[in-house]
Amino acid sequence: MQRHHGLTASAVALIVAASIVVSCSDASGPDSASLDPTLFSGELQGGGWTPSVEAAGKKAGKIDVCHSGNGKKYVHISVSANATRAHLGDPETGMGGHSADYRTSELTPCPPPDEPGLVQVCKVAGSGVATGANFSYTVTANGEETTVTVPAGAGPGGTCVDAGSFRVGTDVTVQEVAQPNVNVTGLTVSPEGAQVGVSDLANRTAMVVAGVGTTKVTYTNTSTTAGSLVICKVGGTGVAAGTNFTFTVEGQSVTVPAGAAPTGNCGAALVLPAGTPTVTETAVAGTSVQSITGTPAAPTNINLGARSATVQITSGQETRITFTNTAP
Image 1 (cartoon, rainbow, N blue to C red):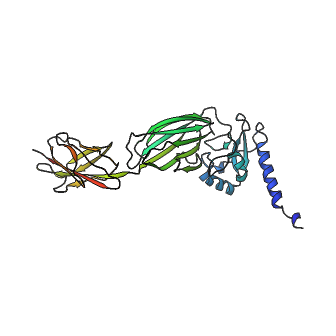
Image 2: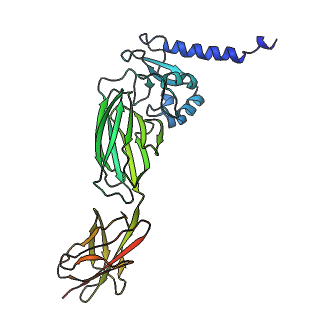
Image 3: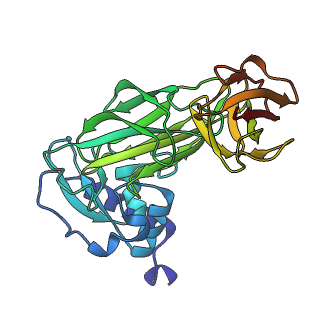
């Protein structure tokens, strides 16, 4: 008698399968659903297909999908989160589904507009990574690969380079070419919700859906062999305490006010890759460098006239260098 009041597991499976087949059966007919604006909130913005979007879709009861059987004609359908997997694939990996299908949103309308969306790759120089250092990226879409080179820039936005223009709704995979002693410690996508699947830091990979306007993939890298440098300033004879001096090293700069001997004042620690960078003081009129010292090892290549010296940066270690100036 129980079968008269409920469905067996096999019957439920058949119904779910049938609903998926029906949703994919006609890519040339009229829209089968009207866009639900209530789905454009929280995790459902941006057009990406991620585990959090699937969970929100299950709570909302449906997901809006732009379906195409041939990549040319598009139908807007509204299906359950489970059925959406047939169209968009696995939200954990972003793989599977129909290659031309995408989730409908304000940034990815259905059908796709004639104007393509732009994808940019951005690079932030994290701890120990010099600004201007070049990183290469492989950009894959529609089975084709291109390579872009992006110089690292200062945070939070870094330096951005155009990676290509794509039909709105196109999945674009970005992978960074590995460099020795450098890790990816941050990988973000904007606008919010444009990511497909989840970021893979170990493989330096992210997938996004091209939307209206510009979609950015931002990488932050840090050096695994970084040390720190502290620059200190002693105001000698004739130099007033508090007089500011500016120093540059490896594209970074720090301003340090002069302090009393023997230790003076010290600036914030600069994170640098292991190596032997040169520290240079910007000239201040009426002053000259009297001495340059340092710990744990004494600086080398000291040039008082050029106000510069070379220091040894060791991974996991703090190095200090102290400039003493006088005003004859």
